[in-house]
Each structure stands twice: as C-alpha cells, then as structure tokens.
Image (cartoon, rainbow, N blue to C red; front, top):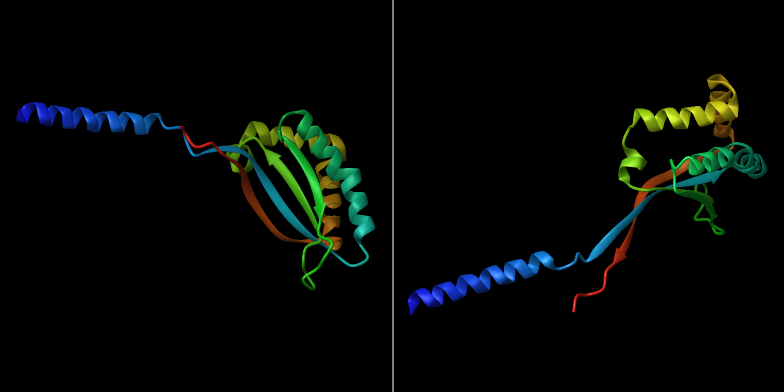
Length: 154
C-alpha cells in the first residue's frame, strides 16, 4: 500500500510538472524601438526639419527598403517643462535587439553604402551631420520593446 501511495504521489508530481511546462508564456515579445528625444534650438526648427526631409528621411526610407529597419517616425511634444526639454522625438524600429544594438559588419556595410550613396563622400556625410549640432541637442535616447500580453489559459 505504501508503494502504491508513493507511486501515485510521484505520478501526480510529474503530471503537475508536465502541465507547468506546457503553459503558454504570459507575454510575447515584439520589435525593438530606439526612441530619441531632441531639443530643437530656438530659431532652428525650419533648418532641422529641412535637414530631416533632405537627409534623414531618404536614408531611413532606403534602410527600410533594404530591411535594415522595420519603420521610423517622428512625434512632437506640444508642451514644455522648461529650457532644455525635448520637443521632437524619433522612433526607429528594428526586428529585434540584435538588429538594434549588436555590431554586424554586414549590416554596418549596408548602412555605410546607403549613406555614401546619399552624401557622395564620407567627408560630406560628416560635415552635413555635424551641422545638426547647431540645430538641436539630444536630450535622451532609450530602447523599448513591444510586448503583447497573452490571454490566460483555460
């Protein structure tokens, strides 16, 4: 009788363990987005918007076309918390953390080729990008990951 009770106990224990392993996860992770907050300097909004339209957008459109990023977008903050507060934000979405933060020589070469095609030379690229220092400051940047909460199992 004792053996039967012990056997039943272990069978129940293993059954509970097996059920726990088949329970679906509570969440499903999604894409990773880099969020960058800019403080556009006084009187430089038009210059910065023109820079974005002439340089940043064509580059990101090509990056999207080549599958290096999933999407991008801008957003604004209509209120201010004081001097140095952000007023324009940029979202660049990647498929996963590896695409967002890990170095890959192949991906780097693709990004470089896209920008060189746009700017013509590395010096022109550097000069143009350096010009943004007079237009804006980056107040904060962060990575966030999309998360979907899965339904409770029945």
